[in-house]
Image (cartoon, rainbow, N blue to C red; front, top):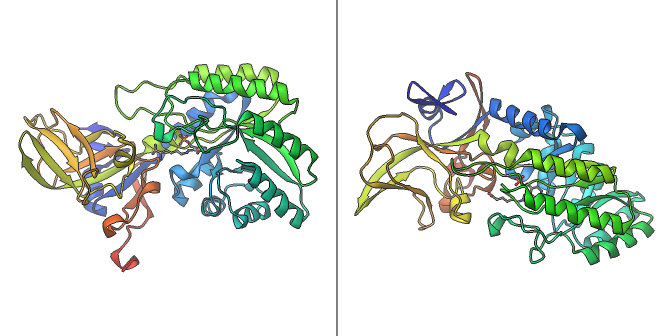
Length: 404
Ligand code: LLP
């Protein structure tokens, strides 16, 4: 997304035109950015050609998943719904991994029937349930065990998953116990050790630490894993001041690890693939003066984009038409929902804004639409894919009649 002649454009299309044509709020995605992200991701790790499984939870739009599939990605799913949408998008089942702490019997059974690559189990009870279902179906199933490496991902606590106090995976001791159990089972083939320590990680050190924990465990386990699934978590720069994840160092650490262990690496990236491809186009309904700040009341709200309300996450906000006039008061961008947390950010020295102006909330491709809800009985936004100078509706705007 860039300014051309002071107009903000995604590829060849101005945000003002999108708003005129499709109304607001509208989620827009750039195909060019998506392709660039996928190619860069592969390039960063090309020496060991990993299997890259797109984390469907970050964006569940079937059209976008289809594009990721065409660009060579598999899928990481965490529910039967996500598995169904990945299959609907045409993802090869042999490129699908199923994670999550609470898979139910019907979900495990469906995954086995669809012959997906791996079920990554997260507890002893789940492993026994997979075994029970496999026995009924008289099949031997490839599974992974998710290890909780007790590694601090140095990210927001709400999106940290690899510490012992988090519900995810099993600790070292349980891991060894389950490994023994699987080795004896006629219905389970332990093919994978999986980890995922958190999301929006911008420092490579937690990854290095995670790899050293896995290295020790494998040495001690004396078991060859066909796959090592390193999860996702690679962060993106939401604000200009955010640092960037050092992929060169992460890649080097994995290469060092692979010198000792001959496994195929799996990644499950979501945000780093889709995050910066998405923009939420929204319109200013009212401007309300209040002491030293003005409330900029926009037509997108926390139901459309939850991240700020849920995690205090910050997204850049940009005007669709640049001018040289600055506002003297600070602006607080808020939605119309009846909650004080329905606010996006407070900004000083923003360009002077007017009612009916179109603005953009940036980098909302990951966990934007997928976390949206109908709170306050607001219909979910339309989604548009932009390819060059073409736009395509990839999900219709919800209508009130859909729920009334
Ligand atoms: N694999 C597993 C097992 C996961 O739990 C997740 C994310 C991923 C892969 C993908 O992680 P990514 O590459 O996207 O960081 N809603 C939060 C993020 C929650 C992430 C949950 N798990 C947010 O908006 O920041």
